[in-house]
Amino acid sequence: MTSRLRTDALTLAYGKTDVLKEVSVALPDGQITAIVGPNGSGKTSLLRCLARLERPTRGAAILDDSSVHKQNTRKVAQTIALLPQSANAPAGMRVGELVARGRTPHQSPLKQWSQEDEAAVERALSQVGLTTERERPVDALSGGQRQRAWLAMVLAQETPILLLDEPTTFLDLRYQLEVLTLVAQLQEEHALTVAMVLHDINLAARFAHRILALREGRVVADGAPSEVVTQSGIFEIYALNARVIPDPTTGTPHVIPA
Picture 1 (cartoon, rainbow, N blue to C red):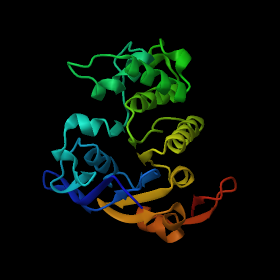
Picture 2: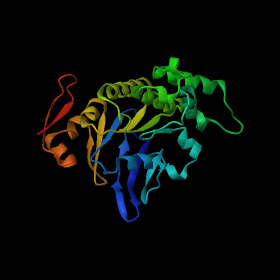
Picture 3: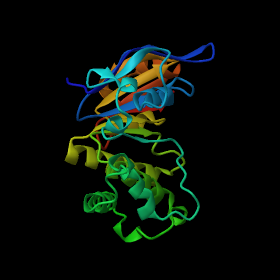
Picture 4: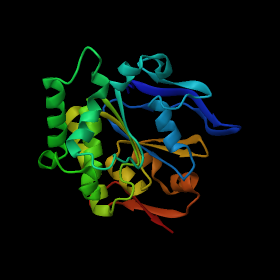
């Protein structure tokens, strides 16, 4: 397994409280990693450290063998794109304007908007199926369309690594499946490295190649869905008694609370 992005004994504290404790993990290149665990286990904090938004108290988040916090900001933003949790666009912002923000890391005082930027925005809109919605206000879209618009923004950034923080938050089951199916398709087509925080363990098992489970700031499981999503594994992660059966559609592990 190769990995461009990893952590080395990463600890993050807020005040006197450690929210991440000696976390050493690697995101497999060209795969989807789902980060799961109970509320408050450190999932979002880990993603923010990987994205260079939080500086660890000890240890490091490492991109291409050096700390992300010691690298050039623009270079990191051209390699890692983050879709934050519960993202909101300014009132009245149009879809095309939102997606164009993904090109910011490619701009500079000497390099303004170009045909290359325009082409990247058009590709991203096409990839998520929103080409005809370019002039619509973001707040006029359905929940699923809105999430696709935000996904288009990070796709327009054209990075090989995507970090998605709860991309299915507040979506009903139909739109959850729609967004995750799209992520899986794009990952496969472009060999992207994707890490996404998910609350639904069954969706994680269905869409991820690998599952990383946190509990109280520590890694308690890291492996293929069949290795992590087991009766004993679910108890260790969530302190929940459950049966695990094969999903009748995909054959992936499916959790049924006891």
